[in-house]
Image 1: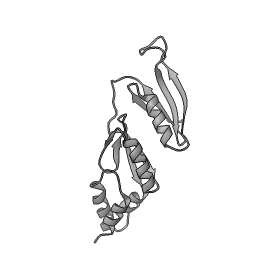
Image 2 (image 1 turned 135 degrees about the vertical axis):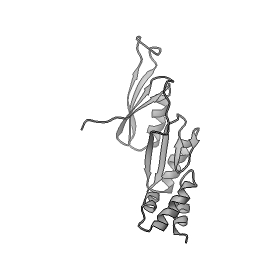
Image 3 (image 1 turned 120 degrees about the horizontal axis):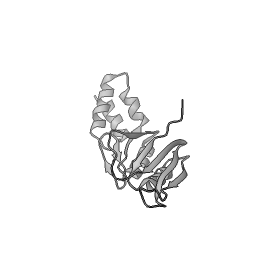
Image 4 (image 1 turned 180 degrees about the vertical axis):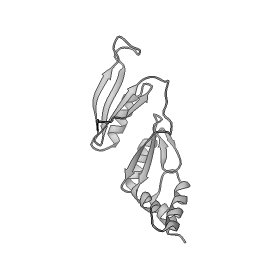
Length: 157
């Protein structure tokens, strides 16, 4: 299978977004920056694309203009080991952005993220459907997922 690289379309903020994302995720780095030349359509010397890796996975940011914006139809999901990871990613990605329901947020660039603790997934897949449904009901009432509150709801009778 060929390599797949998600390309994220920004107006002019691709490099800033790549810098933020690579600062937050381990094993991440910017690998290349290309620039518009004399042919345009943007002024020569402005950033065209930024190639970067998030925990070794390739991404590309394209400064293509204001014609397209992100919607919730695409999001990046973060598998968090515990509440500390949830808090870290939530606090850093939501800063200047918008908190949404059920562990979703939009960062300051408009990109949607799902910040998901593993424990939530375990509870939603519990063989006891009552526990799973109570966990789901608790999650549906939250913005940032708080594992202890989901566990408490799941265990309530």
